[in-house]
Amino acid sequence: MNHTNEVIHNLDNIIGFITKGESAFRGYLITDDKKLLASYDESIRNTDSTFSRLKILTIDNLHQQKNLDTLHYLIREKFVWIESVISDFSSTHKILPSLLEGNQQGITKTKNIEAQIAKMKQEERALWLERSKKVSEYSGLIQVLNIASIIIAILLTIYSIVVYNKENKEKLQVSKKADEYKNTLQEQVKELAALNAELLDLRRMEKYLVTGRIARVIAHEVRNPLTNINLACEQLQSEIDNNDSAKMLFTMINRNSERINQLVSDLLNSTRIAELSFSEASVNEILDATLELARDRIELKQIFVVKNYDENVCKISVDVEKLKIAFLNIIVNAVEAMEENGTLEITTDSSNNHCTVKISDNGRGMKKPEMDRLFEPYFTTKEKGNGLGLANTQNIILAHKGSISAESEFGKGTSFTITF
Image (cartoon, rainbow, N blue to C red; front, top):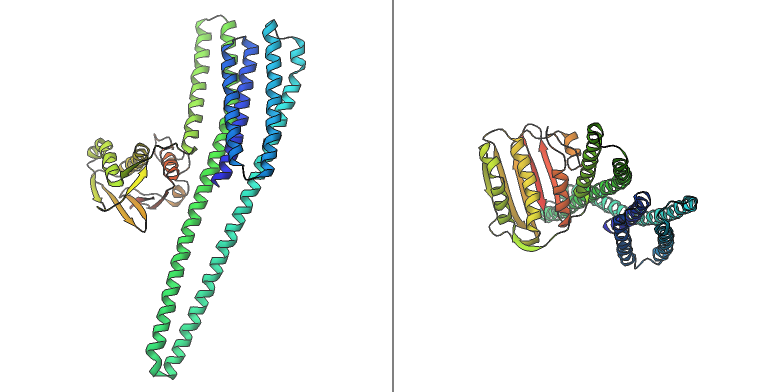
C-alpha cells in the first residue's frame, strides 16, 4: 500500500509541478513580470527531482521504467515548447497571433502527459489489487483452517465422552487429550483474533491513504484556479482606479483566497506522512512533558490524573516533539469531554516486544456513528473544533509505524490505545 501510494503521490506531484510551471509561464505572458519565471524554473527542478524518485521506486518494474522513459520524453517536449514561446515573447514583449495559434499545441502536450500519468497510476493500482487479492486468499485460508480445527475439537470432545462411558480406566488419559486440543484451539482462536486486528489496521491504513489521495486531488483542482484568480486580481488592480470600493473588493478577494489556500494546506498536512527526526526516548517521560503542556486546562477543570506507568517500559526511537503533539491532541480532547473533577487515566506497558500507551477519560463518550468517522479530517463533535486534531495524531502515529485505536461507550468515557 505504501509503495503504491508513494508512486501515485509522486505522479500527482509531477502534474502539480508542471501545472504550476505553466501557470507561472502564462502569468509572465500576461504581466511581463520576469519574477514569475523564477517560479517556472523551480517547477522544472521539482519535476526533475520527483522524476528521479520515481525511477528509484520503480527500479524493479521494467514496464513502468519504460513508461517513465515515455513520460520523460513528453515532459521534455512540453518544456522545450514553453522555452521557445518564452524566447519569442522576450524578444517582442507582445503576445503575437502566432503565440495564440500555438496555444493548442501546448494543451495537446499537457493532455499527452496527463494521459501517460493516468496510465501509470492505473497500472500501479492493478498491481496493488493483485497483492490485495493474495492477502485476502491467505486470510480466507486461515479462517477455513480454524473452522476445521473447531469441528475436529468438537468431534474429539464427543469421542472423549463415549470413551469415558465405556472405559472408565482411560478417563484421565482422554481428559488430558481433550485439554490439549482445547489449548490448541484457544491458541488458534488467539491467532485468528490477531489476524483480524491486523486486517482492521490494514483497512484503517487503506482509508487513510485514500483520504490522502483525495486531499491531494482537491488541492490540485483548487490551487490551480486559485492561482489564476490571484493573477487576474493583480492584473485588475494595476488597470482599475484604486477607489475605496475597488480596494474593499480586492481585499475581500485576497483574504478569502488566502483562507482557501490555508484550508487546503491544513487538509494536506493532516494526510501527508509526517517527516520525523528520530531519537531514543522514554514514553513515560514524553507523557509527563505532554501533561505539563496541558496543565492549565487540567487545573482549570480540576481533573484528577492517574498515572499507571510501567517503570520498566523500554525506550523507543521516536520524534519526541511530534509525539508530544499526538499525545496532547488526545489529552486535550479528553479534558474537554469531561465535566469538572473528572478522571484522566494514563497507562503504559511493555510486553511482547511492543510499547503500549492507553489514555482514558470518564467523559461523555461517543456513539457508534461518531466512532466510525473518528479520524476523518474536518469531522468534529466540538462547536469550535476544526476536525484536524485526531487526523494529525493518526498521521504522526502511522509515520512512526505504530497503530492507534479507540473504544468508547456513550455516557461513560473513551479510551485511546497507541502501540509502537
